[in-house]
Length: 479
Image (tube, rainbow, N blue to C red):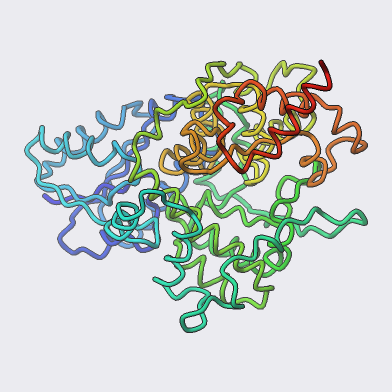
């Protein structure tokens, strides 16, 4: 008997296995122990489990045979798969390749142990075929994101005008760094979703089963079906894409979402496809700077991170600055935060616990910045992001956290550490009552301390030459 395993992060509306007439049964595995491996935010667990149950129900409604391992079975992924393979006498298993490195190998080993033939489909979560992205990275020993992005645009024709980039510029980043206007600006709300019985049941199960995990499942807020995810995307394009570009790096203490799309939770588990996202964004009349800035994140940064993960497995274990501080319990629990935790960190951390989400500049320049300035061990930081964020998986977190955010690779993914004092945060988010208070904040003290502690390692980085010169002048003035 030939079966297909539908992985939790592959909840496509049109998975290629669905149209393969040789596949007789479809397997879904809700592994309760896997969700307990880290203290995952409860919203992440709800998203994955509810999406799987909706997909399974849709297939059953279409007359297909579905076999499930549920949370109540309390089985590891391996035990759950072996139970399905044995019980249903599978002779061949089809699955779609998973972007996280060990997954395909583990499934293949299980099948080999049970003398089951395998058929692995190409990964559908990305625009770029595996062979193409692997070839590009093998040809670029110093793989710059901007070079990769130009290649993507030329390869796909997205935002191209013949052989030239639309608007005669590849990158409108210089136009997309504005703080919110001081007079204020209207920020459209996110869509409000009414959960169906399936999602309500999952919410109750998750709150009961994982009471020590961050967040409250009862506050779950994301789409769990392809149709609802497309509606969510359409609302972003219609209401927020216009202003996304200019304010994509802005922050505001009482606004967790601003003009961001918040599609990565759905995109990273197949509820949306890259093709759908690109089509929606490029058929709008939003300013080109906003469209380009958004497209760059989707076909540039996201696919570049996946390519980095595939090409450079060493990134999982790097620690160039030899940082060893361990993550304290309050980062996971949200309880007993230190009274001297800077306002930006406290504010963003509180909403991560509420939503399982913070937008990219808060992740990089508030949370990641603070982790690095304080000397936290990069692997500890990576695990925290994996657990707390609804869109976080190894393929994107390893290069993003270990490389770009924590500089643990010494400058391979990002050419300089993304660190700053209070001045930048104040400029982009007005976190303190005045610029002087931002300058005098513990964030600023931590910034200068970081540069001084790691002066020897950073001295050769030309992008930090001015900052290091300022640090030395400050140090000399203090005697």
